[in-house]
Amino acid sequence: MNYGGLPALISMNNSTQKMDYLKGIFNNVYLKDVIERNKIKNKDEINILIDILASSIGAFTNPTKISNIFVTEKHSKYTHKTISSHIDFLEEAYLISKANRYDIKGRKYIAANLKYYFTDVGLRNARLNFRQQEPTYLMENVVYNKLLARGYSVDVGVVEVNQRNSEGKNVRKQLEVDFVTNMGSQRYYIQVAYDLSTEEKQNQEYNSFRNIPDSFKKIVIVNGTSKPWRNDEGYVIMGMKYFLLNSESLDF
Image (cartoon, rainbow, N blue to C red):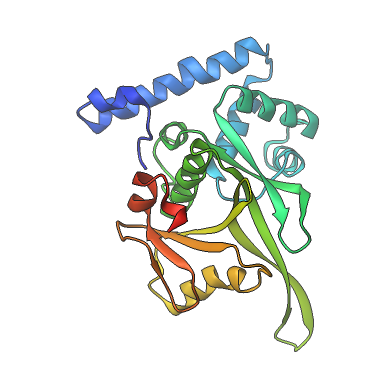
């Protein structure tokens, strides 16, 4: 998950060579092409935009939120319309890909927030000088890319529930499902977790599943090499390596 999957990396023997290559590809190929092809004048802003997107994989955002960051922190009038256009340019260059937010119970898309993933995590890491190596978010990005490569449509899911707060009042809360994955009539709900070593972590991942009102398969992908197995609630648990190396892993 450090260097991604660009073919040229296979022939490189050390990490310095790989990092230099990825940084060069990002700056001299992807970024240069986006700026020149789309005649972008505000180069500083799009560079900061890319850094924001790279830093926030796995987090909900949208052009308006990003624009507010520029206003409050950068004192720049980088409008949400311009940001939206520049994000489109990055998508057209196959540098990033967006996942729409889907209300599972309401069976509708929620336009307010999206998630953006990098098409190659090595390029993402190179952009951030190989800092911010959050394993769970990188795993999430890799799983998203692999699902798309296998032909699935992939959204980010939310499940709205009513829960009692500390004052005993009912409040609405949205639980997240990392991916709602579809192919034809088949649907899979997928959570990505670095580990499930504690009961608290298990409940965090399983609570979303427990509140989904249908019987489609529910899968948790964890770090490691473990083969698929089912827990007491019927959820499939499988290791990341097994998922990546077996194209039909979701059909266990």
